[in-house]
Image (cartoon, rainbow, N blue to C red; front, side):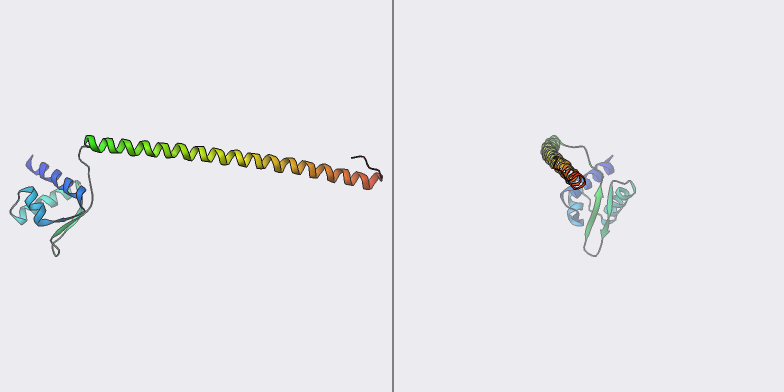
Length: 136
C-alpha cells in the first residue's frame, strides 16, 4: 500500500513538472536511500503508472507521460468550463458556416439565373439570324 501511495505521489509531482529532481522526489516521498527510490521509480515504470527515464547524470527524472489520479472538483470545474467554451465556439463556427452556405447558395442561384438569361439571349439571337426577324 505504501508503494502505491508513493507511486501516486510521483504522478502528482509529474503533473507539476516533467523534470523532477531526484533529491526533491526523495524528500517528498520520505525516502533516504537512492536504491530504494530507484526501485520505486522502476516499479512505477513497470506498472505503467509513469513513462519516463532516470537521468543519473543530471540527477533528475524525465517524465514523458503518466496515468492520472482521480480528478479533483476544481479540475472538474475547469474541465467543464473549458468544454462549455469549446461548445460555444463550435456553435459560433456552425453559425458562420451556415452563413457561408447561404451566401454560396445565393451566388449559385444568381449564376444559374444569369446562365438561363444568357441561354435565352443566345437562342433569341440564333432565331433572329435564321428567320431574319426579331421575335425576342
